[in-house]
Length: 191
Image (cartoon, rainbow, N blue to C red; front, side):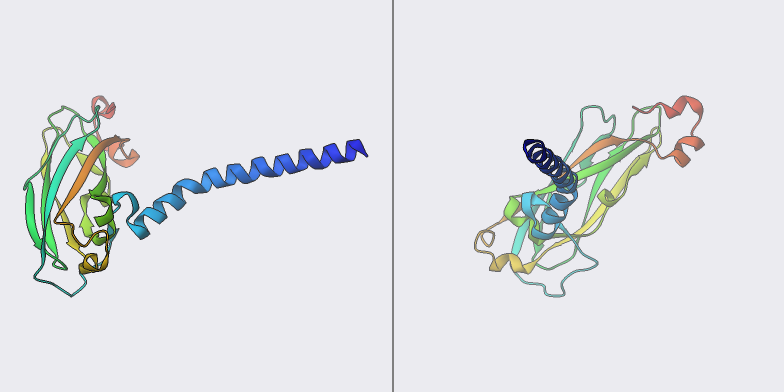
């Protein structure tokens, strides 16, 4: 009887370990989904277009740019801030420059502060949705189109927000194989 109880206990422990492993594996995509749906942590929403409702109420949007330590690019917002009407589609630009002598691939992570405004800041199109590759000496302007959802006025925690900051951080990304193959051999060492 004692051996049978030990076997059941071992089986239960194995089940717990498998369950915990599955929960750890699912945590990252679930957290990402949760942040995109709720705006938690300043994660902006994504939409195919504006709401159609444009109000006279405005909010100031500030633009911030940074890069990880090993990213060789220069990266900055073209315009530091703009005053936007709630519900109105807007277009802002960031500039990136690759001063290095090799092609560099980068991906931008982003957030919105204050965090309570994240669910109401909606991107329609953004350079951050795709990896960017800059050739040596290349300078580009990268657009982001967005609107601030008028529903922000119905949120008791966010309705008094007067300034929203959109922040991007560029990170070095591995060069895609098809693009790396097109580069001269000396240019393929990009990290």
